[in-house]
Length: 148
View (cartoon, rainbow, N blue to C red):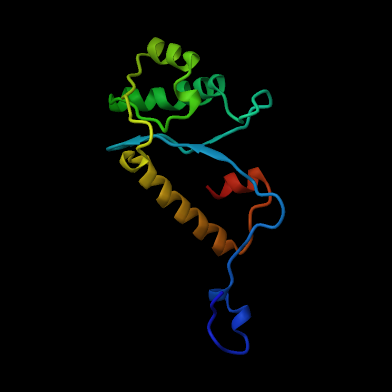
């Protein structure tokens, strides 16, 4: 660890960084955007039934129908996703076809080409700044989502 010299350097805010103590809180977010249009940032609630945390049924009824479909109708462009299993499940595919939402084939390990990755970088940077300015780490999912 490097810090500036001086008698009170250890307590200078420039030398302090917030850290997690105990168990960390994880919340997934969904975001959708295209040139000139965007959907709201949506926290993804964990499923009690699914050990992986989020499932196809939740994706369809909490993201695809209420948020992605209206964005798709406004913008009319094919959708791209990050390859999560709930994006390509049989259940999700059935609803995509039923709703007429076209999905762009996207190479599996190509996150560098996915434009959402640049947006997540900006979001995470701004989020860390918000946590730093509060000088307090969120202690619950509700508090964490409130900063977003």
